[in-house]
Image (cartoon, rainbow, N blue to C red):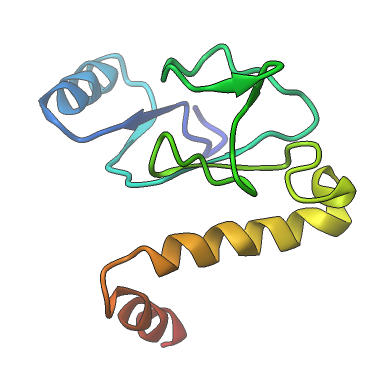
Length: 124
């Protein structure tokens, strides 16, 4: 892609992820391989959960969560859902509060020292 955008994101750098990267490179397609611990699903204004196959528990088609934290699938989070925490959760005025809550949760579950080391590096 000539506009600087990444065309494909491969999640997982295992042998299968590297094999996919190899064939994307052979086809001259832009891609990045990410090894991730957390996925924050920012829903926006359209909710479509069909692409994710996690046997995710839902209620009326909406993932079951606690303020965006999916306890049944560690590392999976949502931001932007209607009433994630309050009426304003799907609006610009409330999404920042919800995003901060998710990030604070992720930082609090990291091994001791990770957050402070990371913050020091980012401050430089």
